[in-house]
Length: 328
Image (cartoon, rainbow, N blue to C red; front, side, top):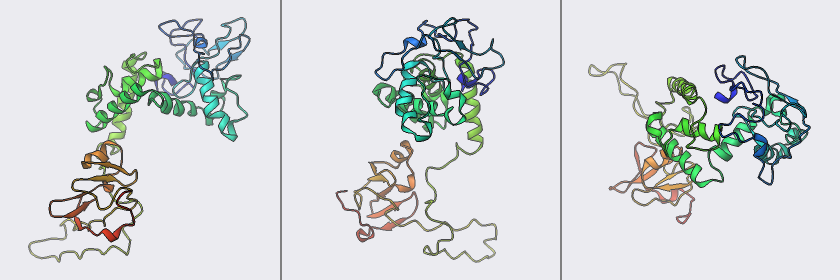
């Protein structure tokens, strides 16, 4: 979130003049390329040299709001705006074409004639960020970016959110995604990266304190409740001299196979797994975890011919228990 306030996080929707340049609305890029020059795509907004605009917001530590007019920084109204700073005619035009013009409640807004509209409406401040993250940062149309993003994210999660363990192509997960946001390149270190990383680590620590690190990929099926009368409740052990009321509750019986929502062939072959909500086949239960699926949707046939589901217990194979075709 460095883009939205820098040393005063989340205090600005507009790009801040962190270089303190009079020409900052035109560009603050290290390579000097003008924001208005990022207009080579067919959906790019037209650059109007007479457009006049003053930023709605700016952080307290900056010289003041960004401005453009025919006499002051002409054609330079394309600075960054929104949660991760939509910047340049290409990005504004793409956002207008694929999001704003498609939503009835936003069709009255034209970012190509008023890019400041992103910061003038509370409902639009995050739209550009969500779209850019999905389309560009995650590499929707760019294979190498997509590969970097997913490999680094997998490493980050598998290491219990250890940023240092998530390095791919020379950048850890936070630095790589920051490079995509700030410079459009995974391997290009973003501006003030040490402060960005400090913010990122702080957010992750808060989430981990809230239980993110200890969350199990398994768990109860949300469609089932503890009061479901269809599932018999095990009889508790009587209290004897060898057991006390402090003994843990007996484990719940295993869920029936296949799990609800199963989309793969049934019954599975030996050591076959499937994530029920997505229908992805795999060879290990970790396959489900690695793809953000729910491990409770994984099943495997053991050496005794029993079918283990949901990470606990086993049921004999009952081919009549599912309506799913074997060749599904």
